[in-house]
Image (cartoon, rainbow, N blue to C red; front, side, top):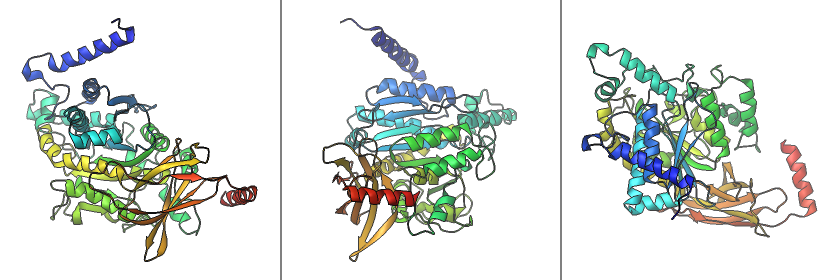
Length: 484
């Protein structure tokens, strides 16, 4: 068989990576993915390459178009049966970690998670195979690689009296203790206060009986053109890159991994008056269920007792604004700018714990990480087409919860993707699903959702829309102008 030059290149790269990780004596094995120490940026990127080399058929690596302030890549690894494409009716999920550079546990957990999914898929673990075959999983270990390097270097510079032989040993045995150094990016901007503050729009819109309640894209552009966030700081390149990634990708569910406490946090992250008070979204009940899916599966998060700052979180969950208000957070931006539902998981009191503790932290979080990804398949999904079988993108999907014979509108719509597929996370219950698209007649179906444990296919509800009459189209035009 004659190999092409591309095949030969792939062969040599794979051989090199395998030798680099396994071609040395036993004590050097796994150096591409350490389980008991932290990975600097170079090591993190090498670890992702190594995982891809181990599972090339189910992984794909890509970088966001923009790099960090100090020119480091914002790298993502995809894990799926067809990792390079979006498959209609297969939902997409993401984990983002290390948004605050000195909060590092999520970064290490995502490297370990990628390795675990790769290994268990090869080991024919049925649960993992079902998850990977039916979900397109995106893992970004570090949104703020510059902050990580700042935190690690500062820790090394301030621990010279402890006489560690090198920075790697220091990170393994000691970690980093400063609570703020490296939290922000290289320009000293907190990235989780730097997203367009769409909450202010939604709270204003809520005072009107008919209002826009999703995909606030024009509002996003208006805020970005102002060139400063709600904290009067300039928008950062990392924020802009991730914001457009969120808006352009068909994500269904997501989580943002932090440190500093032990709790699952859900929207909204700020209240209408910016005060500390419970501020639930239209999907509040669903968000609480999603938060519990992580906290209950965690070995400690839902346990009763005092947390890091003396606070108590019932069931290990909290509404963001009830805990402390945050404007310009990534969590609410996902919910209001796209189809994606995002929560924030605080994974422990220590922000940069010693590397030797990472094994136990993986044990605490492993089941939670998997269980939460499974929730991507909660609720309903389907295809929206016309009578000729052509896909209808950007169709609006409205949900009404039916209780005691009454229909209650859940004031947060989603939209169909380019392939006409849509996904709507829903808890158990009876619903009316209404689909609208310009030029077509409105369609309604009634469903009863009964989610199963570890299901990897949401209930399918397809729609075929009929062409509207000219009179109906003219009426839609009038309504369109009214909305504008």
